[in-house]
Structure formats: structure tokens, C-alpha cells
Amino acid sequence: MELIKKILDGNEASAARLISMIEEGKEEGYKAIAELFPHTGKAHIIGITGAPGAGKSTIIDKLAIKFSETGKKTGIIAIDPTSIKSNGALLGDRVRMRGAENIEGIFIRSMAHRGYPGGIARATIGAVYVLEGLGKDVIIIESVGAGQTEVQISSVCDTVITVFTPDYGDDVQLMKAGIIEIGDIIVINKSDMPGAQEATKDIKAHVISSDKKDWQVPVIMAQAQRGEGIDTIMGAVESHLEYLKKNNPLGEYRAEKLKKLMFLFLKEELWAKAMKKWAGSGEIKDIVKMVENREIDLYSAVSRVADIMLPD
Ligand SMILES: Nc1nc2c(ncn2[C@@H]2O[C@H](COP(=O)(O)OP(=O)(O)O)[C@@H](O)[C@H]2O)c(=O)[nH]1
Ligand SMILES: [Mg+2]
Image (cartoon, rainbow, N blue to C red; front, side, top):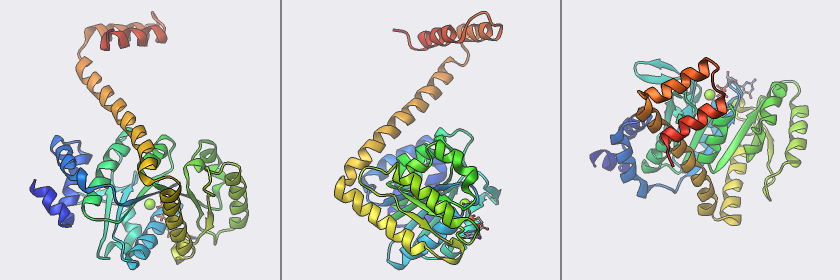
């Protein structure tokens, strides 16, 4: 396929085109991915999550520049719900990546999230394949901290960085929701703000009680805007990759995540297929009506619909 040849040759416009096709769920796009697949699997995939405004894009901008200084090509995928569409291009996070934007070898792509959370992982993994085909050594994915979405992003990534700010008090909910648990590295950004030391101490205490196997999650203070702490983050990212390779061959580590993603995608696929197949079903509409009129309880209704859709 001509498109694939161009991507493998490093043509960014072709890569952008294929990512769009995947975002739109085009059959042609999935076929191209199948052809691209043998050329993938080598990049280090890093996720950065955290509340809007925590400084994720600023950190990525600086990290990508550092990577490029060490000769590594970086691809950035920003899943940005605040993106504004302008001339067909998504702006938003790109605005915060002005430094990295013009460096050769760095490719930035914003992706709109399409309202349904499952779609994020689905389109993201496609974009990862494409960036690997482009020859990126490192792929950084930015996404906002939002429960289910985060869990999905962590399934796509080898290393997850969670970004908090000193006023993370509001984020206690995130911690309770397990957001902190998915971080392999935790960054307290905006350490110029009051309360940074306390926040770091608090989070360190929390992390110690919930550490991951034999990886001690580092809690790093940073001031991304000024580039402070970026070297430490970079070092932690590299140590985490070493750790994964040493203790758990990367293939094994990824296998577990891939299995999870496969069933996630399967669930969506089956749901979409069932909805399409049964959209006009009078039988199901009748059951829905009965639910609306409180003639039947929800358990019975769902069980009847499931039996219609998937008979024994
Ligand atoms: N005070 C302070 N502001 C920062 C720091 N890092 C980033 N910012 C600012 O915080 C705002 C949000 O940053 P951004 O990277 O877009 O956050 P994102 O939404 O998590 O991607 C921007 O105005 C940044 O310039 C920092 O260390 N200290
Ligand atoms: Mg951002």
C-alpha cells in the first residue's frame, strides 16, 4: 500500500492522514494498520495524565526536546477534550508545545475525544502504531485524568506519569478513584506554588503504602514552565523502562495490557454490532416500553433482551 510505504519512509503528512482515518473509524484505515503492524512494537510508550491545567503539555514539550537532544525521535499524541478546531486542525495542547513543535523528528498530533470513552483507547492505539511506523523511538500520550479513560490509557502505555499540583486537595477524589495507583512516576508540578512541599510529602506517604511490586514510585517536584525537574523526570522514565526490561521482559508486561485492551475493544465492537443489528427490533422496543411503564423490572428486562440478542 502506497500510504504505508510513505509512512515507513517517514512522511508525516501520510501519518496524519492515516490517524484521521482511524479516528473516523474507516475500514480502509484498519486495513492499513494491519499492514503497518509488523513494523511496530519497538517504541517506549509513555502516558502523562492529570487534571486540566496541571502542566502536562508543558512537561511533554520539555521532555520531547530532551529526548530529541539524546537523538531519540518523539511522537506526541494529545487527547484533548478542550481542543478547538481551526482550519481542520485541532489546536489546544499544541499551543503549549511551541518549543517541541518546530524540532525535526518531533511529531505532535491532537486527537478529539468523541464523547464515548471507549473510543479513546481505540483511536489512540491506532495512532501509536502509525507513529511507530514513522520510526519514533518514544511516544508520549497526554490525557486528562478522568477515571475510566485513564485506566484505558494506562493499558496502552509502558510508563505512566501522573501530574499533580500543590492544590491537589481537589484531586483527593482522583486518588480515591485509583488514579494515583496507575502512575509509575508521580510529578508534583508548579512547585513554585505554596504548599508544594506538603503536597509532595502527602503523596509520598500515600505512594509508599501502595507501591507497585518492586518498583518504588518516585515522587518528583517540578516547575515545568522553567524546565526544573525535567531531567529528573527523564531519568525516572528511563529507569522505569530499564526496570520493565529487567524484571519482566517487556513482551510479558505488554501481553497483560494487550489482553485487557483486546477485551475492551471486543466489548465495544459487540455492543456496536448488536445495536446496529437490533436497532429496528419491535420485540426489543416492546421490552423498553414495558420498562418505561414500570410493567417489568430492570433485571428481567435486560435478561430478556440479552436472550433475544444472543439466544442459547
Ligand atoms: N506557576 C506555574 N505554572 C506552570 C508550571 N508549569 C506549567 N504552568 C502553566 O500552567 C498552565 C497549564 O499548563 P498546561 O501544560 O497547558 O497544562 P495541561 O492542561 O495539564 O496540559 C500554563 O499556563 C502553563 O504555562 C509551573 O511549574 N508553575
Ligand atoms: Mg494539555
